Image (spheres, rainbow, N blue to C red):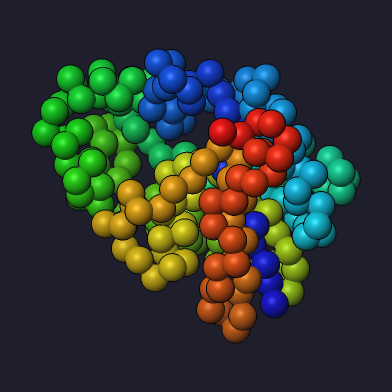
Amino acid sequence: MTRLIIVRHGRTDWNEGEGERLRGRADLDLDEAGLRQAAATATRLTRWGATAIYSSPLKRAMRTAEILAKPRGLPVQPLDGLVDIDYGRWQGLSLREAEADDPELYRLWLASPHTVTFPGGEGLEQVKDRVTAAVEAVLSNHPEQTVVLVSHKVVCKVLLCDLLGLDNSHFWQIHQGLCAINVVEMEKGSPLIVALNDTCHLKESGEGR
């Protein structure tokens, strides 16, 4: 049995409250709360005995992965397929600014996310193609091992939809909190979802809501 542990990165300055913005490929680092969230997640992950850790190459994911890897002395391997969605022209905009830029596209994003390609950027199908290809390679390289994948909200949601046998029209039905843990066990190529959007470790450490 091969186990995948899919983790969303910790908090950045663009993740919270009035400062929330569409992050995409912006190379943001964790803020102080994000560092504490990652440390709490690292403590939780020790129970699974990971043998490899892969991460999106963006700073917020890599920093999270480095904190997760430290207790086991593992190297973090950057994996381009785990990089965040490309929001194109919308990168860096607040949700209100994105809606003002193109109200119809914003409405479609909320109602039919699988139909949207961001101006100058990607759509969810492109994200799905690259993340599933990356995960297939990881599974091939790590049979019967436990592997941690650190990525971003959109990428985690798309990957989990695929593992659940859902298309991207179900994108908004999957929630992924900051530093959420998802555990998937692969038996003969079939995924079993053992944990989904688990953030209990943050609540226990005082870093959750």
